[in-house]
Image (cartoon, rainbow, N blue to C red):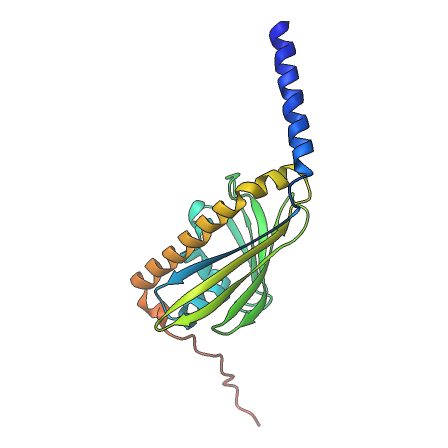
Length: 194
């Protein structure tokens, strides 16, 4: 009986710390991370701008190659998106959509995770550096619940790892698929005009 009282007391103290401590953690989480990519700016932009290409290099796609992915909107650019569903709790379910697309310069996005309130947004801003590119990755979210606030304390390290691994995978993808470095040809309407 004494052991049960000690366990209940410890759990009570932990609950008070979790709830009380959450009031001192900011609800807004923002981060910025710079990654240098050994590939031309235009090629990196094309990979970021084309949803179906993400499976070739994204850290999250590599974590669960069996996850179900459904694409929506146009193939590339503003409105292009996908939703995913994974049996792995570390990947979960959610959706991603491009909200801004400035050729060879910037991609803006919104990200939503099932079961979490609020919208996550971010950008990939590209700055050419010779034949290579620096990518500034931003990630912004609002953590409104107790668990989300505590998770935000470790989120920065996890997101930096995801950004680093994704762009390392992209470099490897370019090395194995040099055609992916070529510019994407714009669609030309070939229907004759009368």
